[in-house]
Structure formats: C-alpha cells, structure tokens
Image (cartoon, rainbow, N blue to C red):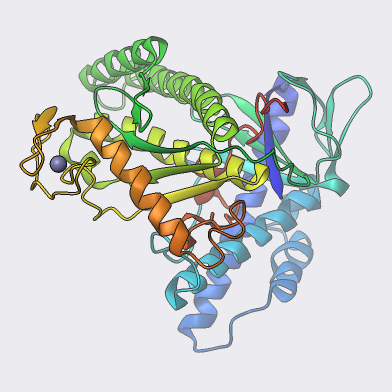
Length: 417
Ligand SMILES: [Zn+2]
C-alpha cells in the first residue's frame, strides 16, 4: 500500500523561480495534451494514446519556437503531468461506467496559473535525498527540507506543492507492507456531532480542541477583513494572503489533531462504525459547513487508511440510516428529532436518551449487523470491510491533491503492544 509523507520545503529565491517555471511547463504540457484529446473527440477521431501525445506535446514541441522553453526544465515532471491527465480521464471514464464509487467525476479541465495549488511530481529518476539531508530535484538543485519526522525510506515519487499561503511542501509516496495489529475485542460506533466533535458508543466524547477553535476564529476575522477591502487593491491582495495563511493554519492544526484521534481509535478498536456524512452539514452556514465537512471527510479517510494498514475494519452506515430516531434500548422508532433536541424519552420503553450517545450506539449495532451479513464477515473479521467502506484509489492530478496530499497515514504510528 502507498503512504504519503509530507514535509515543508524551503527553496531559495532562485529555486522558487525554477520551480515556478517547472509548474508552468507541466501545466502547459497538460493543457496541450488535453486540448488535443478534446479536438480529437470533436473531430470524431479515436482517443489519442498517451505515448503519441507525449511525443507531440513534449519531444516535438521542444523543437518549435513557441515551446522551446520546455527544454529548460526536467522532462520527468512533464511526463508525470501527462500521467495525471491520463488518471483524470480514467477516473472520468470509470465514474461514467460506474466502475468508480463515490461522487461523479467530470471531464478533466484546463489548468490555470491562477489555480490555488501548483504542483509537479518527480519520480525516482528526478529526485534523491542527499546525505546532507537536502532534497535534490533534477534541474532545480538541492532544496532545504524540514524533516519534521524521520525521512521516508526509498520513496517512489515526490510531489512538490505550492499552496495558496505561499508555502512549499514535498509529499513523498512510499510503498509499505501492511502491519496488522493484534486482534482486539472492542468495537465502537461514532456519532459525528455539532457540539462535541464526536460521541462514541462507549459514552466517551471527543471534544473540538480549543486551539482549533482559536485558529478558526482568526480565519473568520481575516475573511471579514478581506470582504471590506476594495476590489483589485493592493490591500485586498494582502488580505487575501492573510486569509490563505489562516486557512493553511486551520488545515494543518486540524490534520495533526485528526491523525492523533484516528490513530487512537484504530489502535483501540477492531472495528469502527460511522455514518456517511453530508446531510446534516447542509443545515449550517457556508463557512461552518466547509470547516466541518473538510474535517469529517478527512477523519473518515484517515480511519480507512489506517484500518487498511493495520488490519482493522471501518464500516460506513448509509446516510438514510435513522440513527437519531431509533431507541438503542428497545429498537422503537420514535420519529424525527429536530437538531435542537439534545435529549429525548423513548415512546416505547421510556428510557431517557442523550441524542448523540443514542445515535452512536445505534451506529455500532447497525454496523455490527451489517458486518455479520457481509460475505466472509464473521469468519475473517480483520478483512471483512463493508463494500461501501473500501477506500477508492485516488489519482494525483491537481483536482485530487487537496484530498491526497496529507501527511502519512502512519503519522505518530500506532504503538505495538
Ligand atoms: Zn425504547
């Protein structure tokens, strides 16, 4: 399986210029190839093959006056950019044919220099980690890296990302063997909430960390400030950068925290069950929604990645499952409860329920029932992942980077007993 390890990079001014040029060339090659495929489609011609496109948009293009500058950067990132285009097309075709689960994927789109994130990928031929700890990138040089944890052993590729806050990261992909943890008896249901981050079926609560709320407050303040600036002014550009920085801070803080939570949950439980998200998120304002949704989908993805790595199970309940309507004591269906109802008494047996704890218990029970019915479920408990919980392979084209560029799933590591 593949793991990602992400580190902050500190390129010099000269290296930043070279990186900017590499981003630009990779983007042009991508767009040229995309235009050719679109043109072929319009003309009713067969889908152009990658090898043919590569010759046209890289090898042949370098010899023309308009594209001669493509020769000034390494060829590896350009080829990788075309691979990303292939992945984007494959995702689109698989999505149309139903082979790919999840949200529908659209046709690949042209990249712009104004995109929020710029990125290029180098394979083994294009980079190496030097003995002095610097990262050598072909035609760019030795870049300083902050090794916030042990450098990955034998990475197969590295993606260099420039985020909207102006920071550079190197995201290494490493192929690792799964390390299954010893089987434990505990299983848990999780209700992702509004007041607390999550309520667990054993009665424990994961609170939203205070430092995260602080970072979010700063982000909101920066956004208010931005909205007051005159359009197109220098102050607006400055304020926008400030918002991007605050965004990055929130994202980093949240990611670190989510890694800690998910590592613990996977370490302590053989199976973790949660609900498919979304529906309840729609009830809140646009900012709150984006903040919470981002956290929730990352939470789920990290759980799935860590479960796959450590031989655990993650079960996702369908969003139509009425977790907050059922009585977890007697099974009576008590009807819909508006969000402000935090406690309710069961009309069947009279038990008083905490809304979230009751939901978590229902999710656990439904998840366990699902798993029992899954093919091979009870016989091979460590591999019976419900179908909807299997993680989908993701590409690394720009559209997907937002979700795939995370620190390695093993961050912090689950201590072996
Ligand atoms: Zn009841």
